[in-house]
Every structure is written in structure tokens, then in C-alpha cells.
Amino acid sequence: MNGPDHPFPAPLLERLRAAQKIAVLTGAGVSQESGLRTFRDPQEGFWAQYSPEDLATPEAFERDPRLVWEWYAHRRSQLASVHPNPAHRALTELGNRLPGLTLITQNVDGLHQRAGSRDVIELHGTLTEVRCSACGQRPKEWNDHPRVVPACPDCGGLLRPDVVWFGEILPQGALAAAMEAARTCDAFFSIGTSGLVEPAASLGRTVRQRNGVLIEINREPTPLTPLCDYAFHGKAGDWLPRLVDAVFGSGL
Ligand code: BV8
Ligand code: ZN
Picture 1 (cartoon, helix red, strand yellow):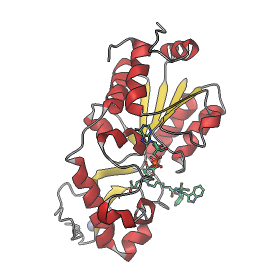
Picture 2 (cartoon, helix red, strand yellow; picture 1 turned 135 degrees about the vertical axis):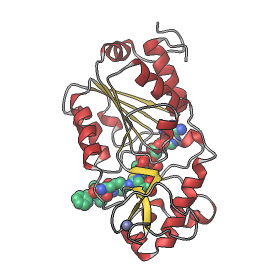
Picture 3 (tube, rainbow, N blue to C red; picture 1 turned 180 degrees about the vertical axis):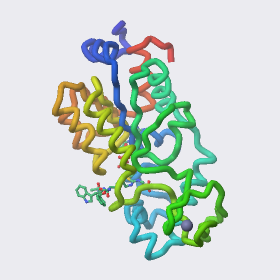
């Protein structure tokens, strides 16, 4: 099976084939090949003057709700013109073949779901929905004007993107499910993430403390790399289809 285009060590393939439960954590690098900039890539145009981390805080929204609303409206508008890439599709294929797959993402772009993945654990919320900053309601429709922060239909409060900002707690159910997956999986993949944002970054380290196999697929090394049993550096859209094919021979 390990033909010339299968650079994956036989022991890894055997462990993945024998795995009952596999957990995958993805970050912005998985959506990079769909054309979305990652969190730490320089932003483009007007937004190049801002660091996403400066805009992704409750303080920024408090200080200038219109600027923050515009930043997220800009990112939401990009979703209409991007599509899942081979990395997303390979993870959907993996989930179809392995009922014991738990897909955890830090991304808010909804691309895993658009690729057909189900039960995606969104640790940092989603760009595709809004919630009221005052009463917490999640209206299904809102006036999506890029430069006017819409008001909550129920209480008139300012609507905000339904994402988790820095300094905000993660959805507790999502975090508990992700930690349970990291605690019980036979194999854990960290894919397309710099491993800098907590508590998501701790999930991989949890696996290290037990006998799960830890695999990284990322364009460049990260703080998690030294802890990994296997690290494949390069594009997720190149590595993942080949890995799924090597494990399941799916002819992806
Ligand atoms: C919380 C939603 C507590 C919004 C996001 C000091 C130490 C430890 C922790 C902290 C600290 N100071 C503050 C904290 C806590 C803070 C934190 O971790 N800060 C970091 C920066 C130090 N965390 C929080 O605040 C979290 N909340 O801790 O609450 C608390 C407790 C009680 C009560 C109150 C509060 C909340 C964190 C969530 C923030 N929200 N997103 C939005 O999207 O705008 S995080 C944001 O960063 C995105 O979700 C993104 O996914 C995430 C992580 O970034 P990555 O996904 O890794 O993206 P990045 O660009 O960094 O990396 C991409 C990687 O892909 C790169 O390595 C690149 O090489 C690679 N790549 C690129 N292209 C490809 C590729 N790989 C493969 N193929 C490719 N083609
Ligand atoms: Zn409200």
C-alpha cells in the first residue's frame, strides 16, 4: 500500500485504520486554500491597518461598534464567493468513513458544514449568525447593511456577530465536547492552526498526556510540533486527500 506517493509511515496508517475514535481540530489554515486569509496573515486593503485580534474583542465593539460590525460584515460577504477546498472535502470523507470522527473547528466560516461535515463543533462561534449584545437573542434575519449596526428586533440592543471574542468564554457545551474528544480519541489531528489561541491549543497537549497518537498537518511548524508523533508540513489541501486515500484507499 505504501506506494511512492504514500509518504505516510506504515505504523501511522495501521493506527488510523484501527482507530475507533479520531478527533480533528482545524484552524484558519484549513480555509486558506478557499481564499480566506488566516488570522495571522496580513489582511488586505482597508483592513490591512488592523490586526484581527484587535477587532475580535468586546472592548473594540464597545469602543467602535460600527467598525467591528463592518469588519465582520466584510468577512461574511467574502463567504458568498468562497467554497470548501480539498482539505474540507477530505475531512468530510473521513467523517463519512469513520463514524467515530469528531470534527472541532476554531473557524467561524461554516466551510466544514458546506463541505458536508455534520456535527461540527464550532469552538469560536460562527460568522453566519448574529446575536444581540444586550439580550442574547439570535434573530434569524437582520438588516445586513455593512456600515450600520442593526438593532435587536426584541430589545433594540446592538446586534453583534455570533463569534467568541478574545476575553470571552467559549460555548461551554462545545468546549466540553471537544475536551472529551481529546481525552478519549485514539488519534488527534491538529490541522491548519498556529496553536496559539487558548483553550483550543490545549486540546492537542491533552492527547500527549495519554497514549493517543498526535498528528499535525500545517504549512509550518508550531509550538505543538515537538509534541507530535507525526508532523506533515505543507498545504492541508495537498496532505489530507492523500492521507485519507492512503488510509482508506478511497481514490479521492
Ligand atoms: C478565553 C473568533 C477566558 C473571532 C477567535 C495568555 C496565555 C494564554 C491564553 C491567553 C493569554 N492571554 C489571553 C489569553 C486567552 C486568549 C488567547 O488565547 N490569546 C492568545 C492570542 C494568547 N483566549 C481567549 O480569550 C479565549 N477565551 O480564554 O476566555 C475566560 C474565562 C472565564 C471568563 C472569561 C474569559 C477566546 C479565544 C477565541 C478568540 N476568537 N475567533 C473571529 O474569528 O474574529 S480566535 C481566532 O484565532 C480564530 O478563531 C482562529 O481560528 C484562531 C486561531 O488562529 P488559527 O486558526 O490558528 O489561525 P492562524 O492564522 O493563527 O494560523 C493559521 C495556521 O495555518 C498557520 O500556522 C499557518 O502556517 C497555517 N496555514 C496557512 N495556510 C495553510 C496552513 N496550514 C495548512 N495548509 C494551508 N494551506
Ligand atoms: Zn436584544
